[in-house]
Image (tube, rainbow, N blue to C red; front, side, top):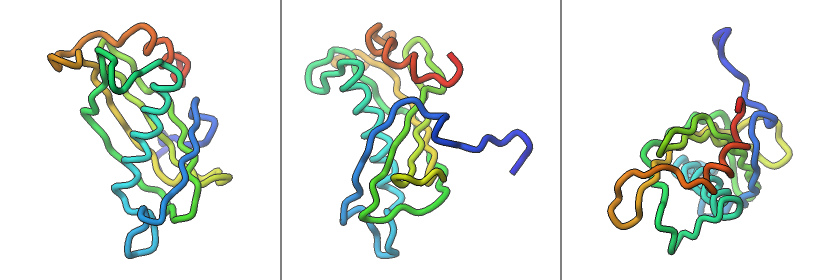
Length: 147
């Protein structure tokens, strides 16, 4: 680990969601399959937007499209673990927001995975980028590590 590497701890995340693993999340090797981690990232970010920013997934005229994701795996999760997903905002632009999502086994201080997740906001019908709506931006700002 380099001198500039940051240890990801729970206090570096601003909003939390518990996500129970499911039997089907495990793969033949006995741990949660890597593709499920991306589902947990998506669930955490969109749950925040629905609960805190008023996103109506069926009718909002402006929606966020995922344009970039990545995951750094640190340790395995397994069924029947409960995942505690913490999110923070890394950067907010005019029409995009970059999140970091930390996945932790419930009660464990050691991170299992660190996700990077970017939304670009578009007008639903035309798919043209637009500024992030004020209500959504207001819900994102408190999630910044360094406002």
